[in-house]
Amino acid sequence: MKKDDCIFCKIANGEIPSATVYEDELFRVILDIAPAVKGHALILPKEHYDNLWALGKEESERVMNLAAKVSEAQKKALGCDGINLLQNNGVAAGQTVFHFHMHLIPRYDDDKVTIPWNTLSYAEGEAAKVCETIKAAMQ
Picture 1 (tube, rainbow, N blue to C red):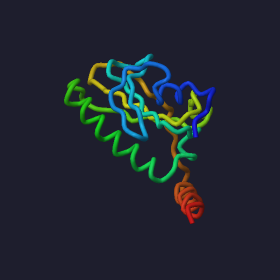
Picture 2: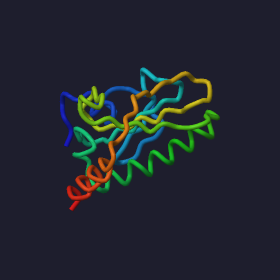
Picture 3: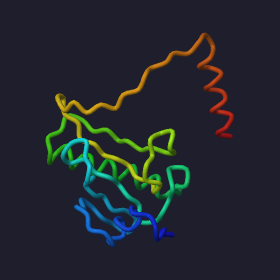
Picture 4: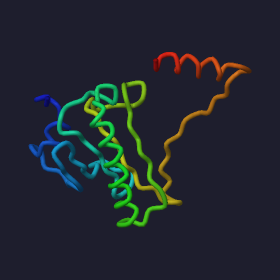
């Protein structure tokens, strides 16, 4: 399904022009128009999924395979030192466009791109409790 009011649906389906790096029947990979560094790309599914939780199993598998393929090409073409795969879900996580997308950000030793967070620590036994809670939810 596509959403008529979704800009990423329009880009992914060719209604709005983009610098397209790759395209197949399920995905379009484009250069981000506001990149962190040159070569910063976005993987967009052609169907509309609000976020990772709405993405199907097949699409989830395909997006990771595609991320590996495109990031390898970025490394070869751009000579980057690393790649960040970034995917935000929900406002609290920084999602601003509510169409699933994954950022592939080439990284260089001296690029000054920051993806910061404040680190925390667990109290004695707390990590085990959190781990068990997550495991139980996976049943």
